[in-house]
Image 1 (cartoon, one colour):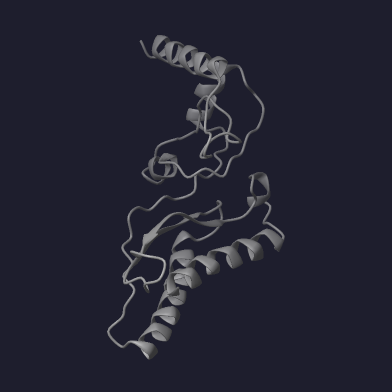
Image 2 (cartoon, one colour):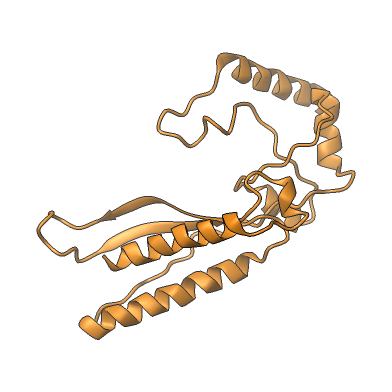
Length: 184
C-alpha cells in the first residue's frame, strides 16, 4: 500500500506537468513535459495477506531544458516521506531505491551532422521532435551528434498490441541499405 503512494505521486506529477505552460524548448516535443512512469509492479503473495514486498520501476522521460537530477531528487524526497510514514507503524521497514540507468534528454542540434546525414538519406526535411527515452542523449553528452530515426509509429509502440506495419519495416530496411551504401 505504501508503494501505491509513490505511484500516485507519479500520477500527480504528470497532472501538474501537463497543466503547466511548457518552455519554448519543451513546447517542440510531444508530450511537451517531463513524464513519470511505472510500467511494472510486483509483490504480495495472496489477496488477503499484507504484502511483505512491493517492487516497481519508476522512470522519468525528461524533456530538454529540464534537470534530470532534480527529478530524481524530488522522487527521493517523496520516498523518504513515505518511508517515514511506514516506520511510524513498523520501525524496521524501509524503501530501497536502486538507480538502473540514466537517460539524458536528446537536445535539438542546430545543423547537427547526424540529422543532416539522415535527411540526405531519407529526403525528409520536416522538423520532428519526440519525447522518447533513448541512448541518443548519452551519445550526445559524450560529444557525438545524434538523431533518432527508425520505422514504426509511436502511437503503436509500447502498447499491449504493439506492432509495426510491413511497409514501415521495409522503409527501415531500405534506410539501412542506403546508410551502408553511403558509409562505403
